[in-house]
Length: 286
Length: 312
Image (tube, rainbow over all chains, first blue to last red; front, side, top):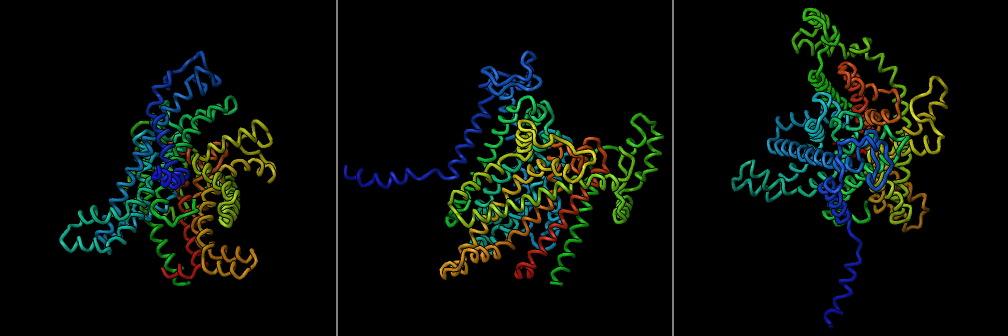
């Protein structure tokens, strides 16, 4: 009894603390993932199947978000589109991080002429406004899921190269890295086992930020008709359909917009949350 | 400062050559056979070959690369496959729309971003601060064209005070301004949000500096505190602002599409669809030039405002 009375104030104070941004972000991400993974089975409509008896239908119990100009269920398309959009954004993020990190580690490890050459190439890529680079790659490869992933992956690489090269050069002079080298660890082992872990935290923050950015870029690309080709739904494609119907049924843009917004917001919150956790001094910064 | 400028320009020149080479490679990689487009899709093989010779496409890559540089230096970006007239002429026609839109959006996002960010940073935790947080959160979580939809719905459809799409035929500056209002606001929403976040973080950091605390401790007027923070926080914001300006030329692409504006962005999208390589190249060269120039401007502005930056 006494014990519980002593404990309760502190645990209560603990409980009253509002959830951190990381917790908000993870909760939102879980929600988004749940609905995009399970959602398409919960909605009894096919995202590609037109219902000619219900063109331009307003939201109703059968079609919760209404139907589009071909009579396709907007909710079903939004949920199915989320799968494609999320797969593209997350895969492209992994690809770009992998390429950029490898190049950055190699540049920092080799130094000298190789380093200078790599820096020049990536600086030249950085001189393209990011979206233009994505557009050019898509223009060269054509639209489609894989092409979009490749375009995003290429466009994001220079940023990761810069980031990782900078971190890796700083890490070179750390005691434990020098010690590893002194006892005969090779360049590969040094880079992956001793250098990489020193900046995994900031790298994770960047990963979440990139994924959020890629979601938005993919939406813009699909909106321009240069991303994943129709009729495959992505959030961008569904929004493009909604633009054509804007005067007839404004709600068609609401659902997909909200879904996309929740997904990017969750990733941004996760990025900010990890940054908070890594740097305890960052208080009152959002 | 002179040495700094010389070094910046030299490094810029190297970057420029690299970038333009990348553009050449990218254009080579773009699908579409210029000779086929010129002679028509059902022309005979001989006619296509003739067109290929006429366009100089039968020369080895290295010769074409040299010729390409020669043309580029003389400001010749080639002829559009589709319209059969110089790309530079088309660009000059289209640039006013995109330029006006970019300028309006840039001014709006700088004024809003700096203003909101500065005031929020000076009053952390206040209701205003939380309001700005709400705006930046939403502004950065959704694609800009979605805000375009909302603005169209509210100000052009539900309460039609502004025109829906397109540009006026003729009409004075007033008509143009009315047509560019919604696109400019659409572009500014995420950009101002981004800048507001950065400004707020920078201001917060400098507000805790010793000299600002001293001003506060001595009971100096609030305006003096503002001045101290602003003077020290601003150099760090030059680079993001210049980057912003450089990126706007490509940023307008999507918004031009939403509002049906006949600008450079709409031209680029049309050219990609039609495999009109010279036009794609023209728009790319223009966008890259602006972007690189703005980056240089950022470095110079930073060096002018912060002597330490000249050393690096």
